[in-house]
Image 1 (tube, rainbow, N blue to C red):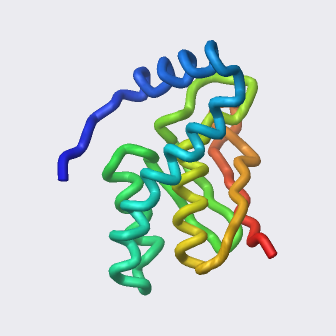
Image 2 (cartoon, rainbow, N blue to C red):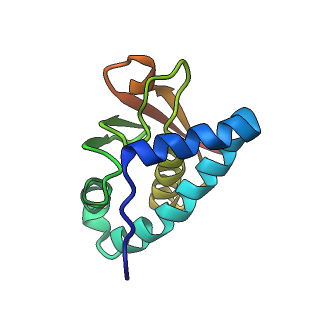
Length: 134
């Protein structure tokens, strides 16, 4: 398997390009991209269910998605996400898609993942709320 290296600046310019054409409608596409990226992380992490979140954390860091990540039952805190750039709105749409996949696979149930705090808006960290869908 080969990997592609993309800089944070390139990620931001790609987001800016899509937003200039599609406005905020592109955020759903970024979320779906994250879901695709998350599939491989889930596949690897599921090989050892006892270390599922530890493996997920290591993969997210090794692949450059985050500097730090802390998983809890209904939330995730992240520092240094690759999608972070100064903005009035949350920007971590791909990461939200990855996290949703991780939690759906872990719980074997549908979940909703919402970014409630974002470093892009000046918050000290990005925080995501995980809610099971009934």
